[in-house]
Length: 394
Image 1 (cartoon, rainbow, N blue to C red):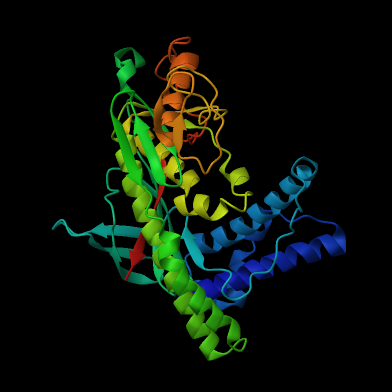
Image 2 (image 1 turned 120 degrees about the vertical axis):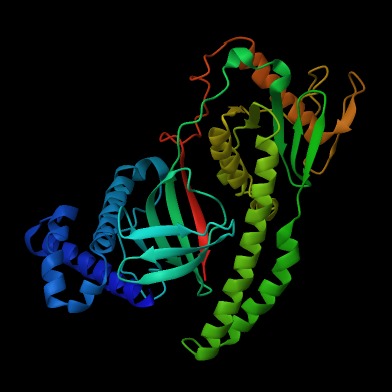
């Protein structure tokens, strides 16, 4: 697999050189189809490429084509977003870490004893032991990507097409089946249906792991570049960071499962998380909570479970009193909502969750009774049922 990734990296760089030279010499823009048709000649001149599945080689050129299309798209939108276009660059060692079988050439073999252990068969590579972290046999596996992470371990990512899920018609859903969800820092999420309240704790994993990561990063900065010791410590840093990422992902999966299983209609604030992390005082806490990833997980899990995910404008959800509607101004450091108008005193996040739920009921539920097939989130994937799942390879 290491050898195939290295050969694919060289093919990518050669394809990029060919495109640049063709444009420099004759103002010709090469396309994916033109470069794909040259693969038989590449194999003839370089026999080592015969040991790589043809679709894997096609995917390399397809990635290059996507990089070019993305470059021209960024040029077109440069005035709107104010970002540099970023011409496709050569891939150095360590910057190209995966191969993809877009249609054929792979097979996932499950063991029948209920174990998570299985076998992944890859064409031109062989049989590899794999841990299957979840059952995907009820869907149709479309693609397989084999990836080498920075710590040197391997993952297999499958794209699976799932059968359509029939949602419960809105006519059969009651108002008490709607919950408002407020994501936060002290508590990862607070859920309420107007009566019952659930809180999901935020483990604040960065505080747990950052000391060890910083120590290793200091050691890394003192090592000599391109030395054996530097590579050794870099791998230790990558393993520590992977442990943090896995712990965070595990917590988000558990939290999203709890949210999706709660009710039929789940309402979030339509947060601009990317803009919020520009606040340097809150950036680390927001990134640690991974609000965007939590909401994305809820969206695709709700789609698979036949639930509805909705979003409301976040304006003043924390400042308004959920009982009387009065505006109660408070800084982020104030964690208790105390209304001088009606005397309501409660947790700030719970007050916000109640306002989120009420805003959806007032603006959508009561005013427009949408049909069940129309009440879908703008955050849902247009190709309903698509998902990706990574499995560690042994």
